[in-house]
Each structure stands twice: as C-alpha cells, then as structure tokens.
Image (tube, rainbow, N blue to C red; front, side, top):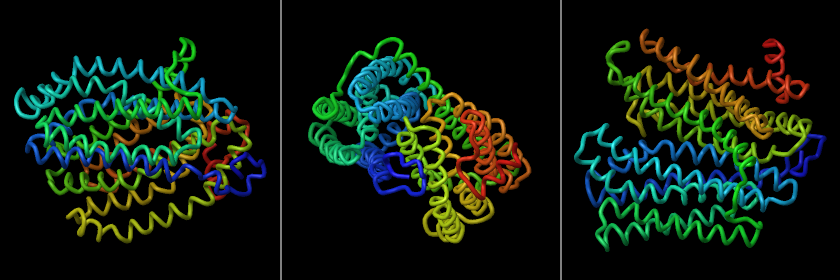
Length: 446
C-alpha cells in the first residue's frame, strides 16, 4: 500500500511513514519543556516544583481538551487535505480552538486557586499556584490554538516544520525563563509570564505560516460545523479523561494500606513501573494519532489492506520489544528504578504481554476514529477500563496477587481488540482487517 492508496495493499512505502518521526519527536519535545520548567524553578524556590506539578494536575481539563481536540481536528483536517483544500477547515478548527480555550481560561480563573488550597492548604504551594493562575489562564486560548496548529501541520504533511518550530520553542522557553526567573526576579509567577509570552509569539508565527502556506489562520467556525466537531471532541475527551481518572484511582488503590497486605514495596514498584509504562506506551500513542490522520478519507477497502500490512510488519517489532523488556526487566528495576520482587516483575511481564495486543487495537482504533467513530471508541475503552480493569486491580490487591492486579494492562486491551474487530465487520461488511494469526481468534469470538 502506497501513500497514494494503492488498493493492492501489498506494501507500505516510505511516503506513508513521512511525518511519523516528526510527530513522535514533537511529543518528546513537549515533555522536555516541562522538564526545563521544573529544573529552573527548583533553583528559585524549593516549593516551586511541587506547586508547578500541582497546578498541572489541577488543570487536567486543559490537558484533556488539548489531547481530544487535537485528535479530532487532525482527522478532520487530514481528510480536508486529502480532498485538496485544507485552508477553510484549518481556519474553522483554530477559531473553535480559541473559543474553547477562552472557556477553559475562565474555568481556571474560578477553580484552580480554590482547588489548590483544598488539596494542600492555604499556604506554601497553594499560595504560589494562586499567584500564577491568572497568567496560566490567560494563556489557555493560545495553548489550544498552538496545539491545534501543530496537529494541522502534521495532518497536512508538514511535520518537519513542527519539529523545527517546537525545538525553537524549547530554546525560547529556556531563554525567557532565564530572563523572568533570574534577571527580572519574577519568581514562580515569572515562569508562567514567560509561558504566556512564548505562546503569544509562537501562535503569531504559526498563524502567519499557515496563512502563507495553507490558506489557514483564525476564522469563525460556524455553528453547525462547530457543534459536530465539539460532539466528537467531547467523546474523545471522555475517553482521555476516563483514562486519566482511572490512572489516578489506580495510584490511590495501590497506595492504600486498607486493601490487601500493607506492603510499601507494592506502591513503590507500581509508581516506578508507571514511569516505565509512560515511556513504553508513548510511541503507541503517537502511532494511533498518526494512523488516524493517514486513514482519514480512505475507503474501507484501502484501510483494511493497510491495517493488514501494518499488523504483519509491526507484530514482530512489538514481540521483539516485549521480549527485550522481559529479559531486561530485572536489570532495569535494579539499575534505574531501585525495584525488585514480584510486584515489579509482574508489572514488567504484564506490560510486555500487552504490547502486541495494544499495537493491533490501536490500528483498529485509528481506523474507527478516521471514520468519525470517536463515540464508539470512547464507549469501548471506558466500559472495559472501568468495568474489567478496575475489578482486576481490586481483586489482585485484595488477594496480594500481582498477576491478577496487573492483568488490567492486558485483559481490557484484548477485549477492546475483539470488540473493535466485531464493530469493523458490522459497519463495513468486511472480514477482520489484521489477518492471520488474529483472524482465527476473531472468528471464535463471533
């Protein structure tokens, strides 16, 4: 299968993968920017890193909105680009991003300060958060437009531009932090003033670039178009938020001394393993977003052919990564995380077993989202995560069985894969798109 949609489905050429390394690198750069903030704030005030993380955790609505809106807008823009005229869609999407961001900013002004005081008390980190909230909230529309513009560039094949742009932001953030934190003595608030200024400059530049190259920019979204996109965004936001809340609940359960044996090693192993899981799963998240854009606008026959090729080529890579992770798990635990024992090894094993299943499921998630079925994917993931994963965690902790508790990484994903398969066959009237050996499992599930 070529990038142009060769129906033979016999190969995926280099053109198809153009943009994936850029998308993956852009994900990494976003994480590095937070590391810069935390590292520089630690030199200003010992309480500043805790306040920074506290604000980011409270502002989970911002994170969910950026992830969900970016996912939906990227698919919509990719389809418009395939039709030959992405400019109007980009203008509508970025206009809607600005409106949605303004609403998030207003929410932040009202809620984030009181939420910080409710969590840690009125002094210390909460006082720092309250002082920074106006600047953080003012940047909310710019952050959402920034994220939407980045996805628009990825969707139109300009991933290299995004990488250069985001690397420039990385340097600019370090420079502005240095100016406001150490030269102007702005303290904790200075980091967020720097962020507002950086986003203002960055959004100004990218809007000019989009106008010049894609006919994009800021525009009025229109009521009907905006409502359709918001409906899809709400479903994707529900899926993302459900995962975030489930992750928080899982941390709480593992840390609770009231469930199962009171073993501090259990929580330490899980916390360290969560850091490893975030690293291992990051390429799979980028792969999902990339495929959803690549599949957008293609007929079901082409998507099915592509899915089969991608699975046959990707399965050996996922299996090799899983084997490497299992073989190196004890070394990683001892050398990098200071962990050992059944709660660590059990997590590494479950994480490894989930990788080929996650690969296959994400291919089908991407195919469904590319056709606009964000609601169906959200329902599947939410129901299985809470209805199957949650009870497995509770039982595993109560019985002190790591294999049962960590099955929440494998069993819901395997069931999601089968459910997505069945949905694909029902909607498209076609057989399983991933091919042998999983086709036999699909037949058995019907």
